[in-house]
Image (cartoon, rainbow, N blue to C red; front, top):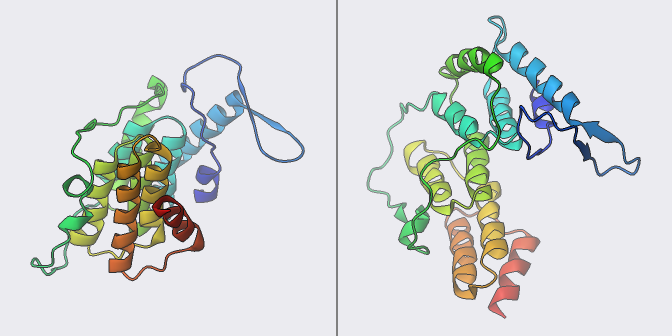
Length: 232
């Protein structure tokens, strides 16, 4: 099921749009996937997930959140995340200072949108099924992959402060250890979105790199080359 959810491509159209559009995949055969096919598959997957006998796990939950984003349902993706079991039972060292992970205190002084909305319409007939899925998520605890997916969603909508708050929460509140996939999206975000503001571009990328060094995360060659190019 998680593989099927992950296979849903990023569409960028309304779920109730009747226009007969097609999506081209990147294979050499140039096969086309009709929008109607994707919509039908999505509805069937949602129907299956909402069945009483279907059991959720965190892999499927994370794949569902990613699929919602790909379908233009960013608000629903966030809603599903918030339905997860976000309670914490561990004790952490409250004196450890991770404030540097909050980007708004280091790089940016601007405000951003507080809420993500759905870019696509949700057909009314599947709303009851989505409600049933939400209740099932209440018993699933998020893992690092779930938080990394949330970081990517916020950055794809140019909300770096929200993304950095997720980074802070996964470390400080949920006692998880970030990996390169927690920070690489920030490097790409600053490189691609601040071309006309080189100081913010460099500072943002170096912020991500310094965070990675703090957590002893090896820098891959791509990130090293990205930051080196800007410094020169």
